[in-house]
Every structure is written in C-alpha cells, then in structure tokens.
Image (cartoon, rainbow, N blue to C red; front, side, top):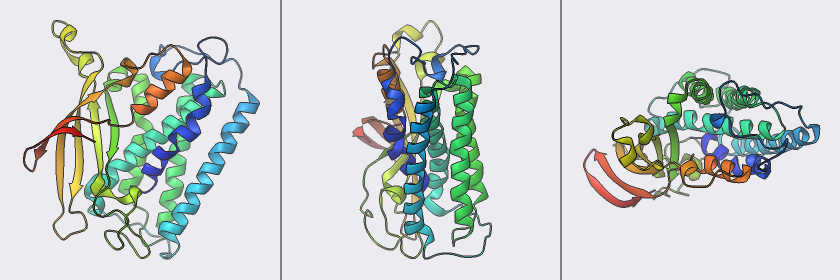
Length: 302
C-alpha cells in the first residue's frame, strides 16, 4: 500500500493538536461531519497553531519521503514513465491508495480545524493537501522501476474527494472505508512481490491487510425497523488476498460486524470527538465470516 499505511500511523501524531479542543469557546470546532451544511465557525486563524501544524506536517512528510527513498526508490531509479500494474497486491494496493488518501485528508482537515480555519475550508484544504502529497509520491514512482501508475493516481483522487462528497451529500456518511491488519507469514521476509532491496514489512504486507467498507445500517433501515437495530452497530464487507507471493494468489471477501465509535464514545469534548473519528478509520475485532472463496467463521477477526 506504500504511503497509505504510513499515513495511518501518522494519524495520531498530526491530528494530536486537534484533540486538545474543549467544549466551549473559540477553540471548540465540531467535526465537519456534525456541522449543518451552512455552518461557518471561522473567527480568524491562529498563526501560532498554523505554524505548529506546518512544522509537524513538514517533519512528517520529510520522514515519509526519506523512508520511501530508502525503501523503494534508491536502487530502482529510471527515466520517468507511466506503468500500470493491476496485479500488484491484487487490488489491496489500489484500495489502500483510496483509503490512505481519505485518511490523510482527515489528518489535514482536523489539523486545519485546530488552527480555527472554518470547517468547509479545512475540508477542502485537507483533501487538497493529501492528494498533492500522494501525487508527489506517484511522480517519484514515475522516476523508478514502479512507474507512474495512473490507476493509483485515480484512486488517490477518489480518496481525496470522498470526504468532500460526504460533507455535501450526507447519505455518503453511512459508508466509510476502514483498515485492519495482522502480520502474515511474509513479514520481514526478503524477496516477494516488490523490487530490488524490498522485503515484506507492515506497509507492503498485503496478505496481512484487509480493506473494509463499513455501512452504518441503522441510518438506512425503515423507520419501523430502525429502533430494533443499535445505533452503534454496523456491518462491514472486507477484501484481502492470500498467497500473494506465490504463483497462485487469490482474494478473499469477508462479512463482519462493525462499530460506529462516534455512537459509543461520548461526544461532549473535542478530544473525544477526534478520538472516536480517528478510531473509526480502523476495523476493530468483531465476529466475521469469510464468504469467498469458501465459508470460514471467525469468533473475532481483525
């Protein structure tokens, strides 16, 4: 998934300042998803906070760039070229680009909100920031053996625009991508699906990753049935791969229970709101069944 998983690990670091919001006063800016469409809380950007966000963002991006340079690009430089690889990671990588850009947009949005930028401006600047950085990574890939992957580029764009769509069209808020991971047997093993100098680590251990689409069922049920279904209980469809480093990889499809943590964690402080929204990017352990290629039941699956 390259950058996508790294962004998730940076989530708490970069969004940590936003978690210091209180419940009252000029610092209190509810999440964009909870604001009326016409809401505008802009009261002037705090320069000190903007400088902190800029510094943390720059340091994080430099660190990620250095990691990428040493892990992917250093030994694989080539003239710029386009190259699509639809088999790499059997689309876990592609879905990871969508998910990772959406997660990056969340990081930026929350950070900009902490500077007292309006919710709508934070949304657009956040999505633009995540997309531009992912594009920078893709251009760097273009000068390596990987090549600039236009499908990756399209998935990055989709991930950047998805939270924008959720903001302006509320029904989309009931459909959210999540991520879960458990180490596969390939972790830390050399050779595999990558290029020279690579070995399987968390970020490209596709066999251990599952990408989920979580559906907040309660909001979609008929009014006669809705009271029976708990507000916090969701359903999720997951996609993963197995035997990815062998000649015969195959995909799996999972169906699992899931949770909307904004309905479980109290929302009476800025910290708790950010915490619940952050955790909602992760599929927490829950009962699940693998429905393809054959049925396997799990008491808890992560």
